[in-house]
Image (cartoon, rainbow, N blue to C red; front, side, top):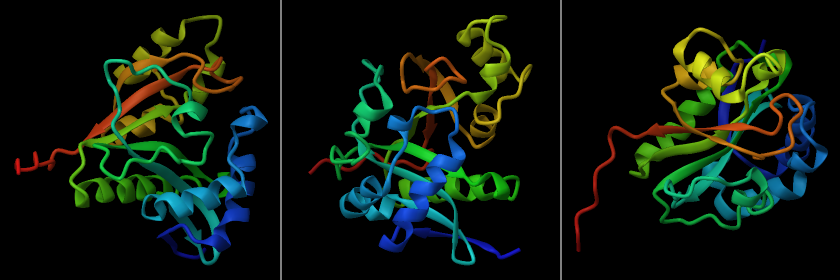
Length: 212
C-alpha cells in the first residue's frame, strides 16, 4: 500500500473530493454533500485550511474548514448555514476559531491513521496561527442502532462516559475534543435523526495577543 501523505487542496483534487463525499456519507441527504464547485470555492477562499489525504495520487481523505468567531452564547446552527452553502465565503481571516466543516476517509482506507493525521494537520494549523482552537458539529452514526431505546442526549452521554462507542464521536474524544452541546436539525442524516454534537478542541498553547 502507498504511504499516505497530507497536502493542502489543489484544483486536481476537486472531482475526486466530490466522489469521496458520495462514498463516505450514504445516509446524508444529497443536498448536504459538497461538490466540485464547493471545493473550488474553498480553495480560492482559504486553501491553507483545506487538507487532502493522498495514497500515491489517489484521494483517500479530506479535512475542510475555515476561521470564524464562533458565538458560544448562541451556538445553534445548521451545517449549510455556518458553511455559507459550503462555499466558505464567511471565512474570517481574523477569526479566533477554526470551524471544522468535514473530515472524511474512504471506507477502504480506514483504520490506517488517516483521520488522526487530518486532525493533527488542523491542530498544527491552529497552533501556528495562534488561534483559540477548533469547533465543529459532529455526526453520531452509531445512534442509528439505539434509536427508540434512548434519546440522543442519553446516547451522547453514554459515549462520552465510555459506556458506548460511536464510530465518529469516540474517535473525536480520543483526539482531544469534548462535547459542549447538541445541535438540532444540523443536517439531514437518517442515522442520527438530524442531530449532531457540538464539539470543541482547545489550543493549550494559545497566547493572548499583546494589546497595541
